[in-house]
Length: 269
Image 1 (cartoon, rainbow, N blue to C red):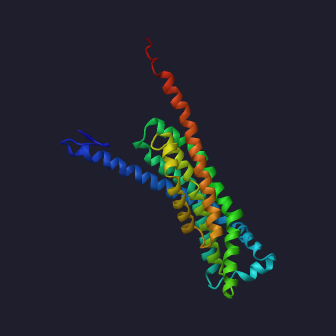
Image 2 (tube, one colour):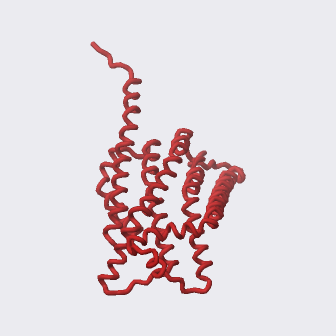
């Protein structure tokens, strides 16, 4: 007797072996993900000064003079320099290793998928890495400067002098970019689900309004509490969602055409 992937029999080893194998796969996934994170950390450590200079550039839109940026960002702790360097290396390592970790997670699901589904995920891995990089770039180049301007404008509106610490700013910037990179993986998930037949374009169109609301709620959670940052994340996600609908619909047409051509001709009188 079979229930899902587990086979029931009188022998206890017949029941426990698949579960132990599943735990071994989970352990391997965790080890590979940890190794990818460690590799990203090692790569990021010597680049910390360069990454720090790179992360300061969006502040130039608030302070056109670079000297003003140096005077604005403070470090209050004696060991603050070391803590800041480790924070930059850790968050940068997470960003660098995130595409690989997502791929390892997808591989962990492979035993429960068919050969066709495995091939779809393999082919989508490159696009997933590209979308993650696109999300990080969009956050850094366009969204982060707007968010910083909005935060600065709120302080001016309240009549409060803003004095940010370097650690809080770096954490904010790196978390902001990581959030964009992860959210931009949504199209890959939808396309994979469409290619393996779990969803179709008609279903995505039916729940379009609900998804729009969910995407803007997600943008509100992951971005600073200003409408501009939320729009900068929400609008591209909606556009990507619509592109997913078109892609899934286009991919389904050849399959339907093949089904029609393979069907026997109807009898004529």
